[in-house]
Length: 267
Ligand SMILES: [Mg+2]
Image (cartoon, rainbow, N blue to C red; front, top):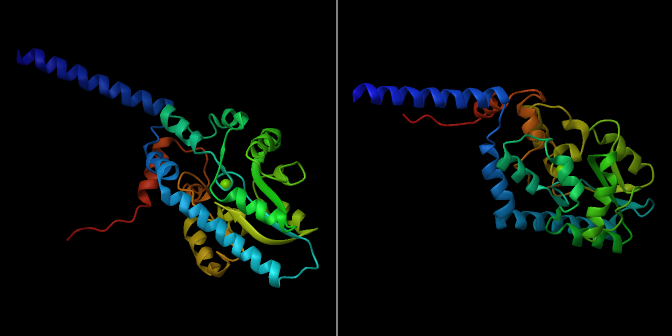
């Protein structure tokens, strides 16, 4: 009886080892780390409140500039698209439910043109346009995603969603050249995004400590010229943890994430 039990136990241990081995060989990502982040983004009313707060603050700053700012150059507001005006969290949901990693499923998701508008974005853009302020969308979506992006934005009622106001990625992810293009004809009053690289190239490819130092150094720009939105699901904050190494395995990424956790040690 005991022998039979031991054999069954051994088989179960071997089967478990096989599953673990298979997972690590295939680089299968359980994506558990995305569950809370995605749930928060999709379900927390606090997220809606944060978006409303950010866009209301953007409008207040724009109103102030319209009243007191320089009128000699045409005004512009510059917005990022993903997780700034469009909600792509269903793609994160796909990654969780299917054990996939970005960019798997991304082009399929984008081609549906069914991303919802984030709270407050549409009203803010309408306010800007009604006050003769041009809107530019600077996004790292690629050129072949432009038409479906225009379709998605137009379905939601976003104005100035056309190829002259949506500046997609053509020569790398750095948005500085595209900001400079807008500055050739406009004065940028506000930059709005969920990634610090949406504001300045100072943060490009910098590591977490430097990113935080720069955020502290430029603290008075936030809420003034820079309007930041919440994105716990992905971003350069996460890429910086991995030192921008995009070839790490899921388990390597998991170890790195854990190594950055600050914890106290009970006495
Ligand atoms: Mg974004």
